[in-house]
Length: 227
Image (cartoon, one colour):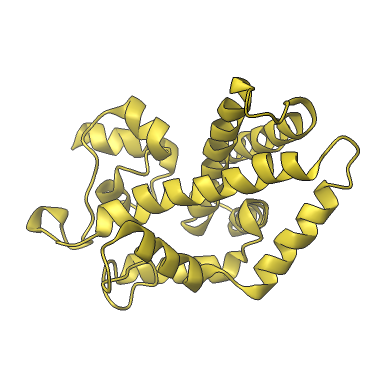
């Protein structure tokens, strides 16, 4: 089931991107353009959640299959290097919301400041070169313009990053920490499975994820229901 769900997310991301790039009119007057931007951003989020599940070995019992999906998802999301992501995420789970956590920033609880620090820690020169090269390849496809590539490929990736950062890093781990957050210093959304899926693929059930990191994203709602 994990392999099937991961494959579907990757394919839908690619299919919708191709459709948006080639068939959706890029015009401020076109209301459908905004819908496709939001949909592609949501699919970008799903792409990263797929890579995240791969880091925890939740896609398949085969380490090789998890690694494959981890590489594919990371590269498609933003040219990210899977082994580095897995290493940093392992530290996040081992030292959540401490000075040893690469995702945490105690220097400021301002969302934009923390997000800027977060991006600085994860962005690499190789990644930027890869994205620039991929952009130039996209605009050489007949029918794809620079505007459509920026609006349907680059912008949704940025929006997806903001969504993931808010739901998976900033909101659940920000200060002040309370006793109810538990040893992982993680908040969790109130039970509402529809909103949890819409907001970030159940990633808002964040305390449940830290308590049970081997539970795939598409089963987290069950842990919330049992709680």
